[in-house]
View (cartoon, one colour):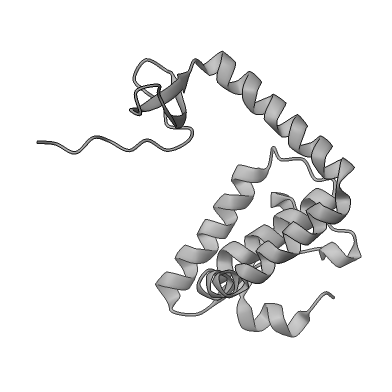
Amino acid sequence: MTKPKHYKYGDVREDGYIFLKYYQGRTSATLEHWMNPESWHRAKRKRAADIAKWRQDNPDKHLRRRRAYREKHAELQRIFKKENPELRLMHSAQRRALIRGTDSENGQMVRDIYRMRDRVSKCTGLEWHVDHIKPLSKGGPHHHGNLQVIPATINLRKGSK
C-alpha cells in the first residue's frame, strides 16, 4: 500500500490547480482544497492586502511579533550567515543597489560575475572578491560595467578608495 502524498501550500497539480489547505469534511474525513490559478492569485493578492492593512492598523503588535520571531530564530540566522557568506555578501550588494535605484536588467550579468569569482577562487585556491571599480560609498553603481574580479588581498588593502 502506498502512502498518500502530503501536499504543501502552493503545490501545483498536473491540471494547473494549486493546493490551498486541508480541512475537515462533515464526515470527519480530511479533504483537500484546490483552487484554479486565477482564483489562487486573486486570493493571494487579497490576503497580502489584508495583512498590509492589519500591519498598518496595529504597528505595535506587528513590531512585537517581529521582535519575538527574530529572538526565537536568532541562532538559526547566525548559523546560516556563517555557513553562507557569499549569499550574505550578494544580498547586501543587491540591497545597496536597490537603495541606489539600480535597475534589475543587469542582474544576470552581475550574477555571472559573482559566479566567475567563485570559479577563479576554486581554480586558484586563493580567495577572490568582486570589486566595485567606483565604490558604492562614492556613488558608484552596482552595475556589471562597474565590477571586476580581483584577489581578496588587493581588495581589502585598497578599501573604498
